Image (tube, rainbow, N blue to C red):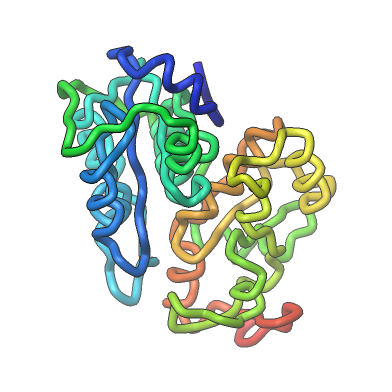
Length: 289
């Protein structure tokens, strides 16, 4: 069973295995149809396509939710069943962005109690570079039933983040780029900055120069420095909308440090309530404490 990452050659050996399901998670926030077009043009044989907005998110409620709220568990479980993913299926997710979107599916499956899920290390670019098989068009798998075994302990709410953000026994990590953490170059959300007390932990720093994840020892060193003596179970990760934060959670788990928690609403939800404080630059807070 693969529970974190899988190499391209390892996946290639299972392309004809009916107990394995491959999910293409390619997506572009600026062009939300790009990933589906790319999938139709060429994908790993047997893969189904997961659209971030339509399949991996629930309805956005302006002024209340973030940009990518979680779907209702039963809705997502039904979607998994339509994709031919059952409770014993080994799932492999991939994208072309270093795992930035595939990690969302990885985390969501774990949230529903499914451990046999991994991200293709290096994703589509590594697959193509290796000259491995491709297929065009749209694919489906025989439908099945997926029964959710929800793990609510993997989720942190805004209220909990508010309580924990300044607690020295907890750590809140911001997976966005350091510039957005400081409140610079914000192009996705109407308010710039970060949650006061959070620590900058850009997800891109989990990757080596070739687009693959850094080795577990290197990731362990990185997160031990970020977390100090705080264990993963008391770590909350967020980003702009609860997507790339899962990349940090995957890296922490792959490093052997345990499972952290996701704040799904993330920054785009946090800023819907003007009573929640924000910080910019070096972390100077603005608004209520």
